[in-house]
Amino acid sequence: MIVVFNGPYFEAMNFRNLLENEGIAVFVQNEYMSSVEPWVVTSGGLNPVKLQVDESDFEQAESIIKNYLDGNITLETEI
Image (cartoon, rainbow, N blue to C red):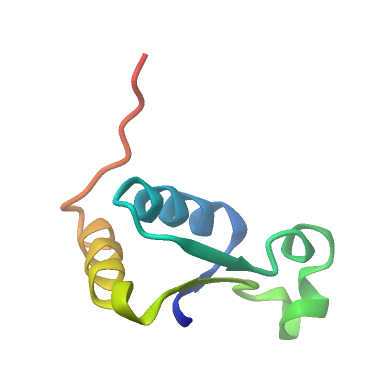
């Protein structure tokens, strides 16, 4: 497993949803502790959640995250 993202809980969950929608299995490290005591997980509680993916999915996952950060992918809500 390779870390593809470190960040705050809510941002990590957005990326997790994006990746899982593309069929990429995601392991979330520190999911619960980041909400309860983030300063225990990382120094100062900064970027406590880590998303990890399989090595074979790393390039695709990295591309999806980069495209989202560049504004090429948006989160859309269906009503």
